[in-house]
Each structure stands twice: as C-alpha cells, then as structure tokens.
Image 1 (tube, rainbow, N blue to C red):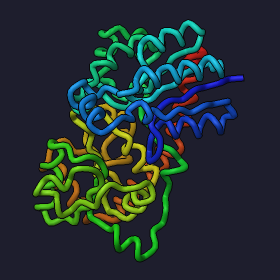
Image 2 (cartoon, rainbow, N blue to C red):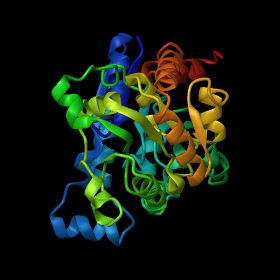
Image 3 (spheres, rainbow, N blue to C red):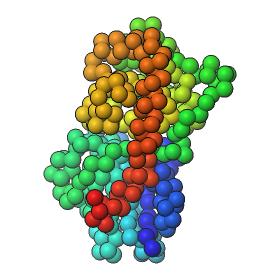
Image 4 (cartoon, rainbow, N blue to C red):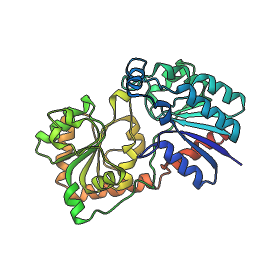
Length: 339
C-alpha cells in the first residue's frame, strides 16, 4: 500500500493541505506535518534568525529530526514537501538511504529576494525530484545540483474554490468593476493605480495595500477563502497579475478564479497562453497598462462577453484535470514511469 508523508504549511489555500486531502480521497495512507513549529522561538530570536540569518528556521535541526523519525516509524514510499520546507540536508540524505523518494513542490521561487533562504539551497540537491510551477527557475535549479526538475503548474482545491452565489446583501458588499487578490508588490501598484484613476470601482484583497497612498483607500484586507469566493463571484472583472519577483508565468489565482466563475483580465505570459489558449477563447490578455485599461473598459461595456468568457474559463479549468488531486496523480505517475 502506498504511504506518503506530506510536509508544508496549513490553513487557507496552502498546497500541502490540498495534497493531503487528495491523498486521503485516493485511499493513500498519508501523514501530515506542519512546518510552522520549525519557526517557533522567542520573538527576538525569531526576528534575528529571520532578518539576519536569511529566513533561518530556529528549530531547523529539531524539526528535521522529527521528519526523519516519522519516516523511520511509518516507512512511507514518498516524502512530499511543499515550498521552502525546513528540513536539513543531513536528514534528507538519511531519508534517501531508507529508500524513500524525496519530492518537493517548490511553490515559491527561492531566488526571490523576499524569500531568499541561503540554508535552503544546501537542501535542494538532496531531493530526488523538484516540481516547480515556474519554468523560469528550472535551469537555476539544475545549476545548483538538482538532478531531476519537472515543470508542474499550480492547480486549485475544489473543496475551497467553486461557484458560490452571494446573497443580495453579500453582493452589495463585494461588488466591484475590478477585484484583485494578492500581495501589494511595488510593480503591481501602477496597474491598480491606473484602474482607480480611470474611475473604476476597485476592491483589493491581500497584504500591504494600505502602505501605498494610491491603494490605501481600496484595500479590503486579507481575505479568508469564503471571502475570496464571494469577492470573485461578485466582481465584473477579476484581474490576474503574476508576481514578477517570483518570475511567475502564472499564479495560484490563475486556476482559482476561473474555478469560482469570474471573467478574467489576465497578464499575457507564455504560461497563461498555454493554460487558456488564444485571446478571447477563455480570457482576455494584456501586456501594458494602456492595453489593460482599454480591455477593462471594453469588458465593462459588454456584459454578454464577460459571461461567455467566465463560463468558458470555468469549463476549461474544472473539466481539464487541474485540481491538486490531478497534480498529485501526475506526481505519482511520473515516479512510476508512466507518461
């Protein structure tokens, strides 16, 4: 019987949670470890390790030993970690000697200055396979010694992202011309500022929008999953921007938004084209701010087109094998040699 140990964050839209639920649906014997305990420490020590020692997990070695002990006790076939998981190279080597396949789904780009963890680069080459949702860092991963690197897009959790029809009161609260959910990266501000200055009603969900004078009045704070569903379903247009600092070609919202059923105005990237096809089939693309504004105005004036695009994208994503269960099946088939 297949056994998996999954390690990652928990709560919200964490991918590790989605993999865990999917493994249980497939009747795989699975065990979950949250890596949050690796960062537990008194405040000053935690801050020192984070800011001075390069995002260093205070209890890296202790947590690594816990993972090793779980592997010794449960004898899994696979260890599947997500993101910048705090497990040291020594533990990974010992786990490999047990005949356990070591896999990582690298949700963030570790070369992003906001995430850059020097200690993590010593660990990456000890994984048997790295699955990355960004093609931009494949060569970088190979250059630091990762033996097998495969592109695997993000997906969505169907238990969290699905069409939820808002009540009249909820729709009144969440309705917008354009909504965007994600962090307030500085390179995103000009796009949002342009929409606001064009007179569009904009709702922003995520962190740090309150730090910028251009967007402070439009932030709705960090959203839980239910809020995201209602906000996406209530908006006329859902803006999809990639994270430049992460070298993204697509993001988690690229799948979550259409799974809820919204019209997408989407940053034009090769990966988005690969997912959604040609312009106007399922989404509308833009490359520049003027192009974004022109297409947003056109969409706002054409309700029937918004509905058509939302419906097409919903069918494409929900019927196209894009859940995290599908991603887990791909991982398992890859390891078994299936194509």
